[in-house]
Image: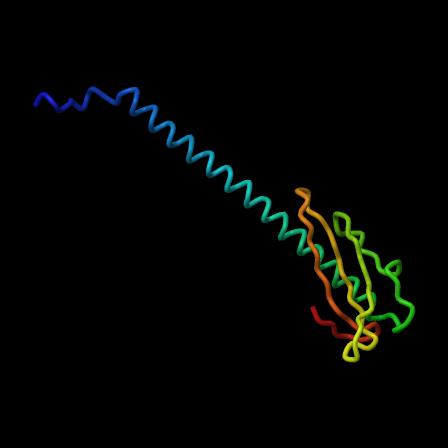
Length: 129
């Protein structure tokens, strides 16, 4: 019984140090995952807000007559936080006569660019994303 230790002897300093290191590493990895999830959440939220802005712009176009469109006519809703760049361009081709593409660009606080766009016909009630 020389190789067995008694239950009252406890842990050695090496065992405690090793266990603490494992706990510390686990904690650091968990915090990194939480930070990454926060970034994904922000990207999803900004994309959602960009889609809301796009829908608002398409609704503005829906009530306009077909001619004389410009980017100056479209504004992001004031209730939406952040900055949005809105672009309107005419679509070329025989199948897209009179149609325009509306593109909304925004950025996250970490610098990721989010772009959403939809094609619609001014004065029409439908659009395609």
